[in-house]
Image 1: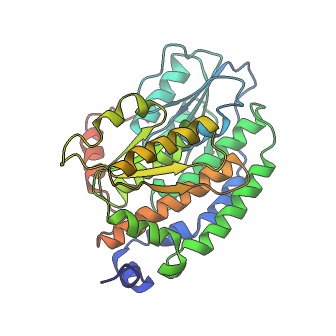
Image 2: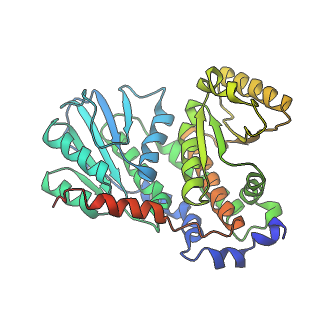
Length: 358
């Protein structure tokens, strides 16, 4: 059966039993709603560093902000994906705890530590859950947002209010241009890649077909400026497509990873390059050199480029495209993209070991 026959709307609906595709079609709506969410902000105080706490899809929001503002933020910004805070956190640290579900144990623990032991300025974002309860208990400003079918489909509800927060407390300037670009890109992209758009006109379906023919585990390569979309794509392939993947950064891979290429017949290389139209000359030269090495091995890397007027818009648009690619790849493999039984099981096992906080 050809890919265009497999990726028809009727078959997608039969496999996508929970309606995850429908959630992604609503991303332009989610973006418009999330942009208009006014976050609850902490009392004004001097901020010397920022910690964004999150796991999984919620952590992606911090990764995106870090990519976007890497060259502009006046203070250090770290994304924490763990229970424990770094030693430098103190009363001049802004801590943003994000958990769309409100049940993420790592985020809950770190927020409590930040408030009770570090005297940090703490804010939280969730759709409810334990994180909202502990925010009320410890007088932590909390912003309640919506929860889509899954936390990974709810990315914009964590990201955009967090950006509004940074603007309101004066860390960054106006985001009017970025938000306008995001809305334009999401609406445009939605009309290009949603499930009723036929294969020959649907770049996400075409990319899914290309990737299906690659060997696994897939390897996604990006520069630091696109590390958020790179890792998000790796995670989406894991969760939605149920396949193994890894994400490796330039230029570091040029000092170690490439030496493993082509050492034996079983060492197959599957290369997906994430490229930015605005990438630096140094990064462009690295990608071109890596391509030359791979072509000598009869391997042509799959290159995917960003689109958009602003850096933030390009990052979100690329994530939207690649998330859809992972969904279509699941359909090609006859897999419902929504269920994540292994993740659910580990959460149940850990819940029994976690001291419930009320």
